[in-house]
Length: 108
Image 1 (cartoon, rainbow, N blue to C red):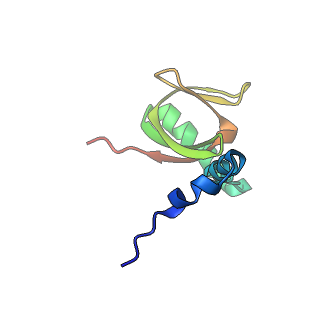
Image 2: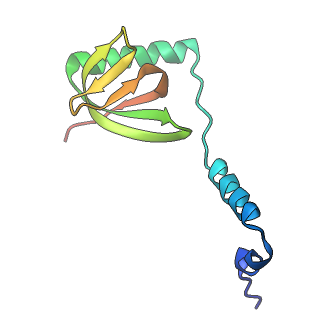
């Protein structure tokens, strides 16, 4: 059985610049391209946001920020159309451009 040590055996021969570039390259592999929504998807997202705001329902948003996708859960307190920002009750704010998905959380 061959027991390879991976990059460990080569690091002694690598210049620090090469190691730095390899680490940056690995970080860039994890980047996610911003999802583009078409006109219909934007309209549906807008309607669902308005419905969640009117009914004060807890939602889970899919948010794209800094080349990463994450989920945020909360109740919508305010929709500011001037600033194009959505506010949760706990004070977190999300620009409309970064939101690309919404789902309602079912209360048990």
